Length: 399
Image (cartoon, rainbow, N blue to C red):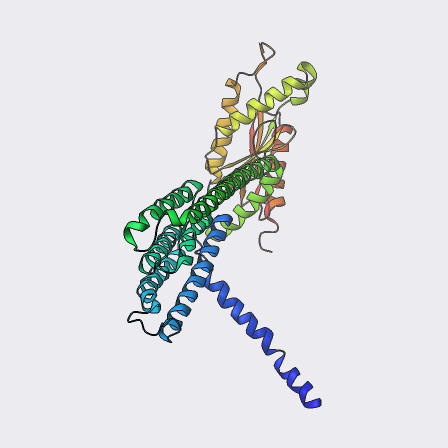
């Protein structure tokens, strides 16, 4: 008993390891190319490869049994096994080629090859051995395989070809009569109709999945846009600014280029709201958002920071270029015509604070703090002007 328990203890860890090894090999054998990204297509490719491996195994087994003489019939010069050998060998070669194609992006071609070789093999076996009545029922294999991987229309064509082939068999094989195979014709017709309907349902189901997947992706895009966009102006919001500016600062520090920061405030915005109402204030915010968007490059980041404040991040823009853009905006905004409730509102002005990474701050909070301080100075000095941050903000530069 002790020896038996010892043997069990020694052998038990090997069995799961061996099983895991076989499972890994099997998964590798049926793993499609990474170029096939759609989940349902990858599933079809795995199913096709698994089926091809099974068919190849069965073909090799049948060929081995034939070589061992299992199919031999004494007294006949040509055995059934030798007849099947002439069909099995080329069929195996085609199935092996189809398996090779199915491992890449050409698995639809592999599916067509599989259906074609199965149909040819079954019809060939029936013609070469008409005495075996059971082979006729295998003529539905081509349609059954096609229904798994091809469209409902292609599956219907395959069954139609099979049905027509049954009527032509008497002319190709002695001993086969269409009148004697009415039950076979009815069987194939019934199975074909059911399989085509099933293929049609599968095709509609896959189309529905594609539509729902597309709708889900569109919903995710809309939700993403809602999470990073200001709903009023359409500009990016504060959350997006923090994410992208942090990443951009890391990239800028590595590649040694500056980032220009412009913080914008609409002068006397509260007075506009009190005089004309919040609807007029919203109209001003929308027009200013559009105005700022036209004064930056596609690579720049324009955000509504909160209330009537906006921030623009300009990668690879020096202090001179950033200040120049800020002054152009400060001058051009006076020409902005804002319509509300059938009337043109009075002209607005902007106060702008400019800061440059890394001269005025090495972190997100530091650089925005420098721009905010410059903006505060612009407002304190009378508004409608551009102020550049002072270099005293760099007390943490060497840390």
